[in-house]
Image (tube, helix red, strand yellow):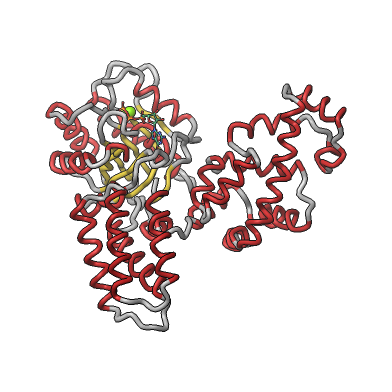
Length: 445
Ligand SMILES: Nc1nc2c(ncn2[C@@H]2O[C@H](COP(=O)(O)OP(=O)(O)OP(=O)(O)O)[C@@H](O)[C@H]2O)c(=O)[nH]1
Ligand SMILES: [Mg+2]
């Protein structure tokens, strides 16, 4: 979502880098361009203006010295101001049992999906999670969340199956009663969405708030809403009070200005970012990290965090060792592909890395995409152990047998071979550029 903004900013810094000693007109020119980049990213005018003033004041105040590279200096100042603009990085700190969280927002903003994601996210460390939905308005809305919650082991769902005719208030009261019995660490309450903010909706939400007494009321906002997001936040804030915002659909092509302006315009902190439809597509809002991402430094930290959930450091060490010694087999390749899928797919990993465009082009050249991962796994599954250990023995007849066994074609088997070799190539290049080494070292390898 921040791609074009981030590319522009990197371009501006690149120019500064070439300019040697920092002169006032260089900074002025850079600031003008940053201002345009902010506006193009859909950041509101007042926020962009204030941002540039802050950066300028700081740049002047710092009395830039010749020994520091101008680009480093301005990057640092812009980075720090961005962190400030984005707001404090505070997600939810789970407090006294049960920590009650209520989700509100317009129709289709992603509340129910987010309730499932939050349940999974907060359910780590063996926390007991209870999930409830008061959405009696949309048919099957409660069922939608019940199905999501089934994927969170040990979670409790209210209302129980078969209790179909309860009012929103009754569901709230039943949830409180159930929570007293089940004693969950966290209770997540999903509510109904409406196309527009109206009195009836607000009344119902106010009653839900009254009965549940949530510690956190999170407004779920689709980033595609654009500038209107600020009005929505304002209205919900006035009517029932919110103390955090969760932005969804960051995987789309919205320009990101909403994320940049939200705190400044509403005074309300963003707590989570959602980046897809899967239960794992949620991350805590970390201003430092986003500022890094915006300034083209890549988001290695969040990649590492995600990776750590799926790879153990010994496994990573083994993979690195194999890649270095050239003994990375098809078995390892299949293993990596499965893990990449678990991490949210190739694209989501690429987004977090610096030099993404370059790497993406390489992936394209080598025909690597999430769609064919499944077919590739089938192809590898049809290979013998010997073939998996040494791809060089794959001759025409072996390829035909594998294609037949996996329900694919010889062309696809050939394509996989090319990809496999391409992957080795990419790893080699990443290693050279320091990217892989950095990731590996952060993973404790
Ligand atoms: N791409 C993408 N899709 C998302 C994201 N979050 C939710 N969705 C999708 O958006 C659609 C609506 O999501 P819901 O969670 O049902 O939205 P809701 O706010 O509960 O909707 P109502 O209950 O009708 O008000 C679903 O198809 C979700 O899969 C996200 O971060 N990225
Ligand atoms: Mg819903």
